[in-house]
Length: 333
Ligand code: UT7
Image (tube, rainbow, N blue to C red):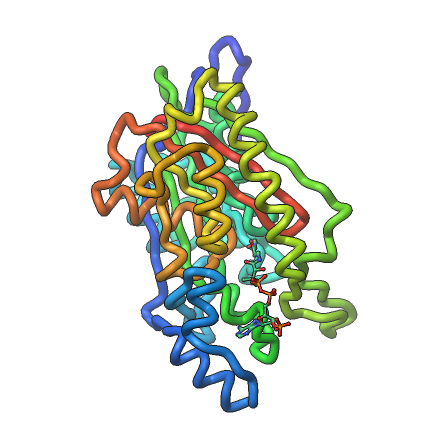
């Protein structure tokens, strides 16, 4: 990676192409309820749909890692962008379920892409990870530190779910989404904003680690759903309005809203606060569940390929999750 003086740097970055990948194993609410019932844990399709909007999620096979899911998502994004892997000079993977403690999932993905030498690192901001990673890529492109970046959200959350805890294990799924971001004379990414509040580390966490060759702590996801819900509802409207202000736009300018896909009630509530018709809300939570850092790029790619999001449309991306972290990116696609 090299840096150029801001004077010589491109002024904007824009998304050149999108891609995504879901593991084949689609698990319906009914199938999950049946699995939990074998351990005496009661849940139902109706409860899950009513409280979250989720109908199904995808689970990766046991040997499949986040970088395995990131690879086909990246190749699809590169193809859509018309960019060769060897043109990429920055790889950022947002994940909370990395393949290993180290090296980074981004380095493992770089190896799988058959390219060498470019900067590659992971971003850990849980469900806000993609918005964080995209903001970092945008900043590096604007300063001339990179010209073509691959930004990915990839997760195998099924590995850290506690299938004895019905309040969390019905919510999450696995998958990957990717975008290629390139330097451009035209915007592009218009504005972004990132936040974190570490006072709330305990409400959504996987408080385990590896030490002395053993797993220490609790290596499965824990969440105080109602506390997360309340915080999420509060920050999502605020950060969206702040990013609109920075970009000199208003909520009427947003063509598509892609919030983190955790719960349809939070997503619809945010759209209403932004005075948006629900037709403009991109929702894939019904089929994907909550795929953490992968949820926004998965939804983005699905909407592009369905012909909803078109070139020139203004899109608001919003992440929120563990940390507590949140942020938003406003862009012209
Ligand atoms: O990805 C990061 C961002 N994450 C989020 O945004 C998640 C935010 N939180 C939520 O989406 C919601 O809080 C949940 C979907 C997690 C839970 O919905 P809720 O409406 O807050 O339900 P609750 O926790 O108040 O639980 C209501 C009832 C409880 O029973 P009682 O105490 O009323 O008898 C739970 O024990 O539902 C029960 N319950 C279930 N019942 C059937 C909890 N989980 C289940 C389940 N099946 N899977």
